[in-house]
Structures are given as structure tokens and as C-alpha cells.
Length: 105
Image (cartoon, rainbow, N blue to C red; front, top):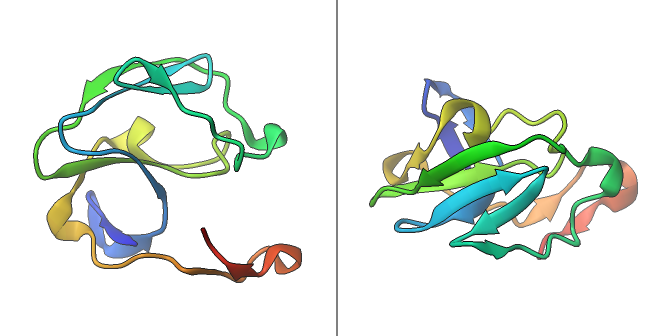
């Protein structure tokens, strides 16, 4: 859970994909961290985004975040890295959609 870098009055919940020192790249929707493809079985195929985004180096003190609804998500692909100082919590429970309510892994 973090404050949106461009509007710190807005809170977001996204999945951390890249840690400081990583290089993150999106190739036709597949996520690569340090040239290794991520196995993202938690992404529902209907929410995949098949676009390509250039590699980005995750600077020290920053994180690369992506939403799980990739084809509709506003995330690091759009506005860049999240400074660590804006991160203040961890999501542990899902309440929407109702049929998937429960603890998060």
C-alpha cells in the first residue's frame, strides 16, 4: 500500500514486481526481471496486457509496481517507480470481488 507519487493524497495497492537494483521489462505482456520471466499464475488471462514496455532500472530506494488487472491498471508502466518513502503498508486481505474475498498470499 503506497501513496501515488504524482498525487500523494491518493492511496494505491499494487504488486511489487521490481526491487532496488532490478531491471524490469515487459515483452508482449510477459514480465521479465533481470532477464528472467516471472511465472505469474495469479494473473487471470482475461486481464493480461499484451503490450511491450522498455526496460527500466529500479533505482535504490524505489520499487516497480504492477496491478493484477494489467489491461486496466494505472501503475509503474504509466508513471514510473514508487519511492520507498511513499510505501506504508502491506495488503493482507481482499474484499473485492466478493467471490474472492479472503487472505492474500
